[in-house]
Length: 249
Image (cartoon, rainbow, N blue to C red):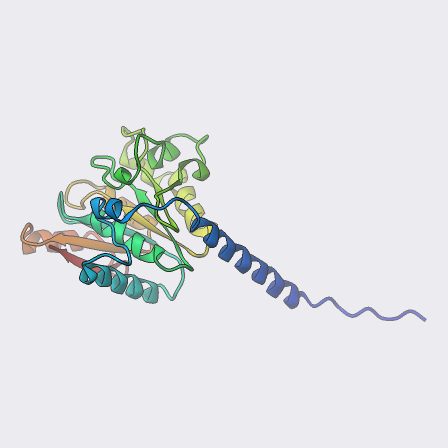
């Protein structure tokens, strides 16, 4: 007499797989924390926040912004674009430190992507010239793994602008750009991606790249823009995506 086999409980298998993935993710984050570290003098020079910095006000401002962004996303990873109203508006400072504040959380990782072809300031976190964002868009032989670099800050990585600085904004609507953003957001569930983008008042780049992002933060340099400039800048973005306006002193 044959014994009837019980159906396999697939729900248990799903749970097991998720648990394995979760353990792998936590292990990867721990391994990211083992890279070389910048000293406090280096962090001060690069204008990056760190836990023992003297100016706790600045540290707490970025921690508060981080908390609000993560709450807004429902505790899910996101791609955030940071731009400014005008040149030298402070968007790089904000982008770098938002990423640094996320990396302070030992359960999260952050990735800065320098998307400024005209004044690539975030790339200055690295020494020397490196292939990066523009090279990925231009060449199908360049992979994401080839362009992610350690910064000297635990759990914080950087994709520099790259060497192909003569690409046009049309690349931002290409298949490679779609592949770029999808792979970055899907690769690690604990990774938060911050795009450092040119000023919205100078080029069309910010308006185009906003379509690739979940959220937009607009940086307004104190005393440098008019109300009309600010209104025009705000009008470039979907109201649901523009989740913050930061007045930078």
